[in-house]
Length: 328
Image 1 (cartoon, rainbow, N blue to C red):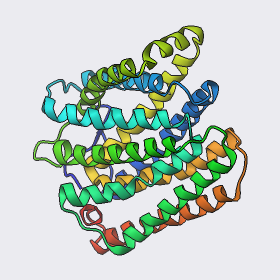
Image 2: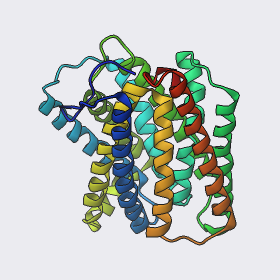
Image 3: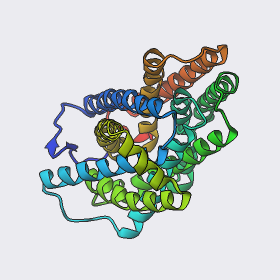
């Protein structure tokens, strides 16, 4: 665990032990993420899954503004990270978000959540390549259960979703790789260094650059002007996108602190667990045509997530309960 005291929105988090801090950050990430997904799914439902680029643009803009506010509030306005690193991170984060939102034109929102839950696999692989970490066969086996889960959910979409297309799976796969690369890159270049970078600085610069990249991408695809026309004709859509982004930013704040203090792989377990809860919430708030493959996929994903959690917990206890480093 990073020895530097955790700060959330400029407020130091003081707990008796690091396990309590981990639970606090994990709970905050889950609650905020549930509010984010419930609001965002409502936005996409009202637009029929279209205008993913506009959702990406509004989200990055809100993240940028809130991060700037947090930097001013915490008094940390000096930039530590290099522009080169921020351009690389922005390409991964904004590209991953753009691909994820674009995939919703072809996939069920719940399937999108399940697919994102399997991101722990590329994160583990990239953690080995980028940071030299090693994982047991049992961890890869548990992660494999997540693959089975997303495969079953995808087959359910094939049977029940008229708009399903293979390009949705391709977009989600690209998003998973970009998101995983972003998490490992953040840890290696910004957090796991002698002088760690404040998470608000990371969010601000990555999304500032990401806004520009998203605008360029939307201009080349022809989506920019179509999205502006939609926003003018549907004035309530942008405020809802901004509200979802607000919840998303709060969740990102917790997630970045988790990455900084407990590692990308541990954080991916927390992120995957919150997605499982959000799957149930999605099914309740926005009912979909039911298929047995959805049920089997949910069971497989739950088993995989629980197995990963159990492995991480055993590693933590084997280290004496004093450090999370052994569980990375």
